[in-house]
Image 1 (cartoon, rainbow, N blue to C red):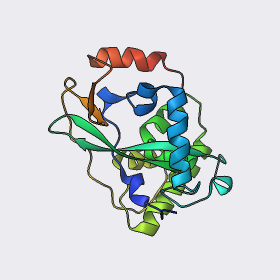
Image 2 (cartoon, rainbow, N blue to C red):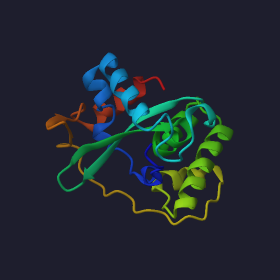
Image 3 (cartoon, one colour):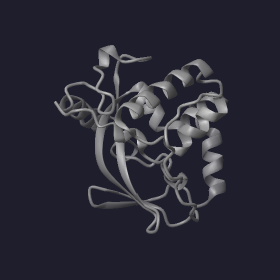
Image 4 (cartoon, rainbow, N blue to C red):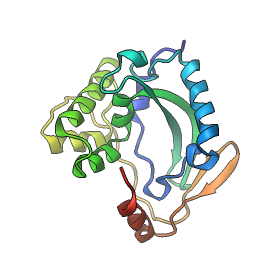
Length: 190
């Protein structure tokens, strides 16, 4: 078994031009299911960030596969570096931007968002980690105090030219413009 890796919770948000571009969307559901099950087994069915076994996890009693990326803001390139299993609370914490969207859409209650944020804060506090800016923003929006240092915000960048690298293949952004992205997000069901 691999020990907990709480730094996973400190990852920056995915650059907006690359939303929706991931191994699952590229390889298809069947191959993705095989890959994610291998990842779960590699970690003995425990969350890579907090170490909880799937059956003992908060909110949902299963794991979710999470892709970790290295983001090169100067090159506008995001490279897949690993995949880890996360409990639902850790995974929702990593994706605080999506958590905020779901909260605004009424798909997640304030109470559930507070549980997710509190869980992530607890994991980061134990490890001496830094609060991601998006999670900090959502905490402040909900009136939750955490006491953690806040990590650096990602740099602003222009829209075009972003790519994702996975297994040596370069994939362009699925959206040519911000307007195209906004239309797609408006149609998306969360």
